[in-house]
Length: 558
Ligand code: TPU
Image 1 (tube, rainbow, N blue to C red):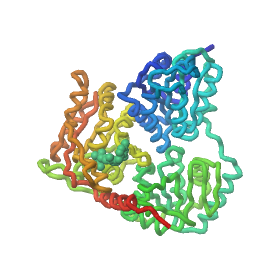
Image 2 (cartoon, rainbow, N blue to C red; image 1 turned 120 degrees about the horizontal axis):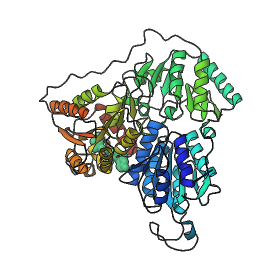
Image 3 (spheres, rainbow, N blue to C red; image 1 turned 45 degrees about the vertical axis):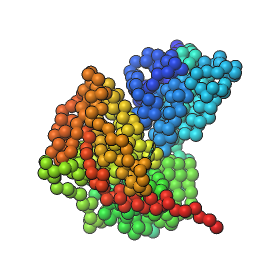
Image 4 (cartoon, protein in one colour; image 1 turned 90 degrees about the vertical axis):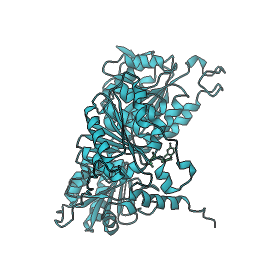
């Protein structure tokens, strides 16, 4: 029994549940694409460019737990590296596969197309190593299976991107069939003794403390810890707050839920809860300048138990090499059982009264109408910009998902990522919230939503500029060329698609557009929402001014 190197990769992808891969063709990867096409049950999905292809894979990984993007050498892969950086920052296992020059040309001094015009073809591999946790170049059939398996295992174990480089004359070389996949999927168990000691230390720590709060961070999902966190909250009977980037990572209808901890833009009461706690169980946090609102909302010190994907720090000691999943699971079975106090107030549900149909559209009214659409089977992808603040203040039904990219923060990410996410989970309702500035980076990927008939609803805020940047630091560079965004959809349809482009200037127009979008099941609907530039969330204004001040700190000289 044998297959080819491309066939081996295809079968491994199928085995790990990746039934689609995203691709842009180029002569260095065409034979590989043929090999992948030959595998039953694996679909090839095309993107407009390699940046979008990487982001589409990243979105698919959010829906399906892993993903693959196939690009050509240099001109393709170097664009995809940006999206791989995003997958690294956001903890998503994306396998980037790049075609590469024919092995006979390596080391000959010959100059090849799509290269820097020098005869060393190792630079792409050197570059990509910085944004991946494993990278391999395949030169022969002998070691290809082991190399493919190694990168896949690393991607899944660490929830991070990896890289495979496959020369154009290697993809169809014969190699053995893949064996069972279990070994690539099994998580390494944490060393028993270290885990026991970490748990014992944490139990002692908790036993001495009354005001316990769980703070959920964005690395919790990648560490497969969401369910264990709910069990832990139930066992300890404590309140739970989330960081903004972890929106939706704890059920908001749970009695323990107390909203978002985000410094001066926290949910009512959440900041006080963290400030007054004598123990904070912090699960998978990312404390960066944005999440701490300029290094201010940054809980530290004796009261913190910081649980990282592979380390727990408690009572001044670090327990390395134990997984977040193992630790939270064990703690949820052994932590002191306490009853949740009855008087803890439930989070007030923010309510806005509807505007009359003829009233000019406002941000609050737009969010009231979008919020009403969000159900348990909704995935809401919210772009960098005021969409962050709008998404974070929504009250979510349990099981609803919010996708954010707060660590990498690449504007334009949302459209291709939602395309990938919708490809991976077509059974869900997909909504995108994106600003006009962000949309201009990756707009063409809406054409692929039309091609693959994905009924994604895109709410595009036309406020004629980079409002988030205006609130951080204003200048002429924050004002952009206006487009006819809704009009683009017909351009992309080109007479053969079912995309719909609509404009909403008033509350009533938005309601009508949403009604049409709900009927449009064979393609995306883009609703261009016209908002006054000054009409943004108060949270953005308050957060932006702090971030602006933090950026403006002069260098310390002493
Ligand atoms: O809600 P709003 O108006 O802020 O959203 P919009 O219009 O999408 O503006 C986003 C503005 C923005 C920029 C220009 N946010 N961050 N940036 C900086 C930036 C530049 N280039 C990339 C690739 N990513 C960025 N985050």
